[in-house]
Image 1 (tube, rainbow, N blue to C red):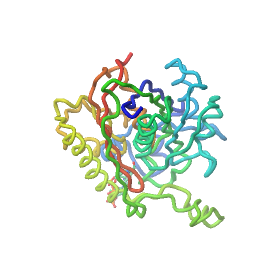
Image 2: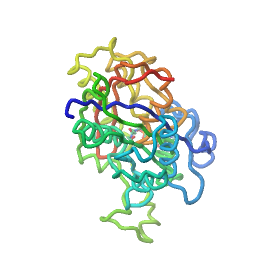
Image 3: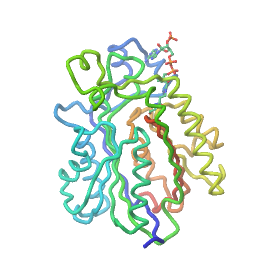
Length: 332
Ligand code: UT7
């Protein structure tokens, strides 16, 4: 079983209906379309407005589409992984809830919390289960209701994030395709710059934590930006080099969608033209663990079997990494 490689055999995603524009944000905080476009590159983001709905509803909708599209029965799935920083509840895992909502009964499931790098961490986990032979059909989801932890009175963070979910089906193959190499890293020193202060075991929810607005995202933009630019580019370039890839032989870069300037800096370091970079940040904003599968969804039709793809990411933790995979099917 060890000779099997892990391939993505399908991708699907969902965005909630409500679209929050820069003009609407400009009525909520002191900002402008011009500032947001020039400093971040986001025009719109989708927001899940329905009361009582959470990340699992987005994740379940993405999984239903994925199962239908790939002609897969829920009974065939043996592992469900959900990458999220906005779980429905601190426990149980959102992956458990999604599995229940879509009727997956023969699987085990758990969440992965690695900030914006969650999908890549999940891909690594799924790859290990496939390569070891312990699982044959895995669903990996990135699902976020970022609007549940965004402070819409904080102009430094509220333009950035959006809600959404993407899901991929991962299966074994004996062909020379799929996940070839992954490099992940983390450094907890980054926790000081990007975190949610309250609601965990250190500062459980209280009237005080609520009145201090400590259940929202806290981000020091500049240090996070500097780390993101250097780490995302470093690992992406490193994984290219150690696999003998060049800017000619890389077909696609799938970068985390946090800031257009970070994406451009990474592509520049890899010497890649813009046409080879998957970019949808202007439409969806930063959907944290969902950015990579939502990129794959948007660009799926352009992908060809054997395409050399580099995924690269950076997020809270800090966590970061890059993966090299050979795409397994012609987009349709
Ligand atoms: O995905 C997880 C990882 N996260 C990231 O990768 C995010 C990394 N960081 C960033 O993308 C950028 O740092 C931000 C987009 C968050 C901020 O952009 P920046 O260019 O670093 O802005 P800044 O924080 O240095 O602020 C520059 C100025 C400040 O005004 P003063 O002090 O120079 O007068 C801010 O108050 O821009 C001001 N500012 C705004 N102005 C208008 C901050 N937010 C806004 C805003 N509209 N929304």
